[in-house]
Image 1 (cartoon, helix red, strand yellow):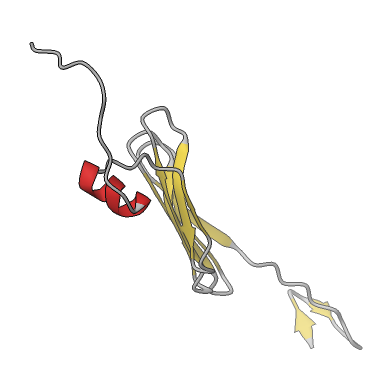
Image 2 (image 1 turned 180 degrees about the horizontal axis):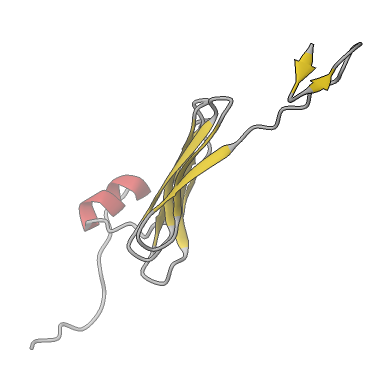
Amino acid sequence: MKLKGIELNGTYKVICYATKKSEYDEKGNEICYEISNGYWQKREYDEKGNEIYYETSNGYWEKREYDEKGNETYFENRNGKIIDKRVKELTIEEIEKLLGYKIKIKGEKKWN
């Protein structure tokens, strides 16, 4: 057998490397890449450049939320892991239901 004019005899080891193709958003964040073997990853970012969603061709995914300072306040993934540091706004009735008893708010009334 000849390969590019060179006579080949015997057994040869062939090494083939995967190639990667990436796509970027207007801010330079990698939003997608695919490897020649079919594996891919996708990402989404908020307006501040924080990654808010990540997904792979294997079915794995993660989603995140951030506060105004860029601190991660919520994380959830396919495996069921949830970290929730978001500030919750509750009514007095919701607080009473959680506590299991009635509450009374003390303090001065301020009139504007």
